[in-house]
Amino acid sequence: MSDESPPFIPRLRDEITPTYKEPLTPTVKRALLALVIFFHVGGGWALTQVEPVKLVVGDIAPMEVRMVSAEQPVQPDLPLDEPPPLPEV
Image (cartoon, rainbow, N blue to C red; front, top):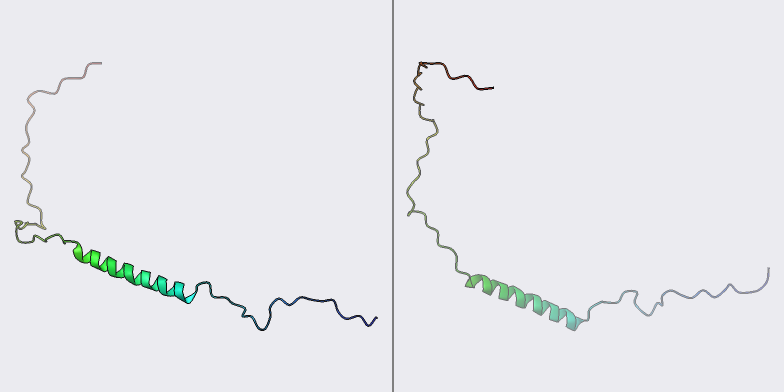
């Protein structure tokens, strides 16, 4: 072979520059944290402003429930005096 050097291969990363860059600056992170805290406090305050519905327990008459059904009255057998009429065809 010849004394040629290998072809130039560009480096994908440099040892001086970091391989990862933060997507948000510290100022933006603080602003987002402040917004989250602000909305949580606002939501808590809003929940304290809602008047709950009053529970009415003693004003309703008590309900009686029977687990055993009452006896059904016996149906009297009615004798038929005359047979029912035949249907017309």
